[in-house]
Length: 323
Ligand code: ADP
Image (cartoon, rainbow, N blue to C red; front, side, top):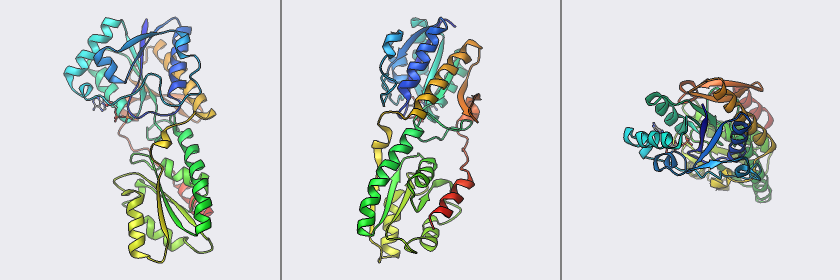
């Protein structure tokens, strides 16, 4: 491998820039040429590619979003689109790819790597923390901190008015942000998709906690078709328990923004450097993850479409501490 291409794809996450910087600098340090590919797979298909030197990634470690931009790309899901991507790579002399993105992006990388003989290395870039085989993902810690900043503020008004707030957080069918966000912000409960078929989490919450000794309650709800979202629970409470004063806040896209936390910057730097190590070791088609503070290589097939389990211990901690 002499020249690598780097792209960010799918949903953006804080820390992607720190990862771009790490991959670029680590590649150059190891004597590789680097090309930045814009707008995810779209730039690969259309040929929006530019050589990256060390200075191209100066002054970005602290920035949210991604300087390479990101996009969702329909063409790349077709064999014709991927052929165009491959042709552009060859034209640019790119012989390996580093893809920073979530489940969808790594699925695309896996298919591309199967069709063409191109080493692809993935970095877990998603606020949702829903990739299997890694303890955490780039952007997750920042999003969690953003959530607790917002919930702290909501608590002020919730307490003053003695209200029950349902706060909807992101997660795309994963409950990590909701559950750990609830623990970190001292919320009374979290409604997460992982348990939505097993128990009626609203019933449990009302039964166990609400208004025992408190003058307000905050419940974090993970966005998901399985939970139905915060609105769904607010409607239910209004119907079943009309005595409660219920409000809904949907945090939305503010959860994706902001300067990455120290943890996310360090994680992105380590994973980015490890991506180049992997390429130098002739690894291919793996996601770089971190487990027990050690770098691990996770085959794409394992990382994607594999439900990452929620620790029951965390659920119990939230339950015990919200009495
Ligand atoms: P994320 O990476 O955040 O999960 P998406 O699911 O939107 O985001 O995926 C990002 C991009 O990855 C898609 O727009 C598409 O270009 C590519 N991709 C996703 N799934 C596939 C697939 N099955 N085959 C090829 N490309 C895919």
